[in-house]
Length: 420
Image (cartoon, rainbow, N blue to C red; front, side, top):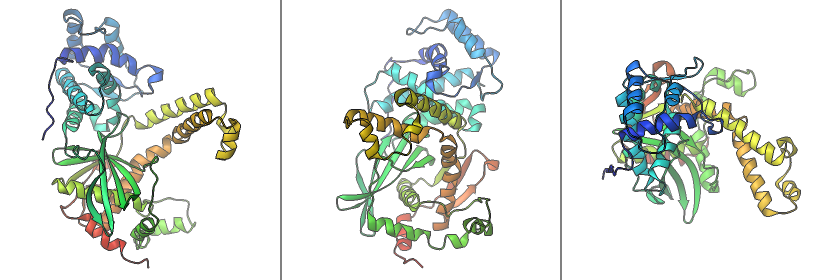
């Protein structure tokens, strides 16, 4: 059943224009926002449209457009990415429809006000842009609106058995992503043996029509359960992979070369298993086309800003990180005189530091090279997968087609083979 978005008067087209120009653009440029800056270039007609709203439209909230807001839009930094607004009406109309869909989507999960949700959306949605979106921003907003409208897997809102793998049960759960994530949805996947389970990475994805967009696949860092026997069996997926690698990779692994070549060996079997199950979910809905972005324009700068923020915050709260870097958990706890609240607060801050500070290069590789390597590795296990575009020279996406058949049954045969 399609999601019906009702326009209840909470927001409208003109209020969206006012909110974005007068408040959102200002907030996006605050240092504390940790959002990379970019230019928004309107045509003369677009700027005249904004002037007309400023002069003739009644304010719909506490943020009417003022001259300084339009001056802020006109500011241009040649060192920053630039969004080119070709059709100002379509730009704001798609922004308005996206807002409606996002608010309706979020009201499945929270009761935040429409204004608060819309401000949050319009500040952060740009983190999902790929290079081509800069010159086709109207299409980007339309695509995001469609992604929030889709409800293909929304019915899986709790752990649901979707199949079996040898003697194990496969269960999945669909949740919402955040605006900092690459996609609208997350699919969480577990392998169960009775009440015990093995955590697999979660898939960040959108479904738009007959196409699935996958922007990231990440380990469940807060859910690290594993089944010992299943984990051991998963490593059988590495059989014969090394033999297919290039001479350059063999030389690298032997320590004969410092050059790290492209390969498919350096993929953890957990990721292969998660994607295998997700492909079967897509097949169950007749979805065979998958698009994987090579680059999100603002991602690197965003994580650099986060790195700076968390380093500054940790230092203000606890002093130099180096004081704690090499201490065990027992040693750290003794530093807080066994005050559990202080210790837990410190550990939470340390976890954020470890995850973000100085990790922008690592995160960038994980979101690009490692993700693309995973899909190439999938073709090794499933030769019937067709990869149409494979490098950024061919476009902004890796595009592949997955035949409608049971990948889980195919992978089962590989899992039961003994290691050679």
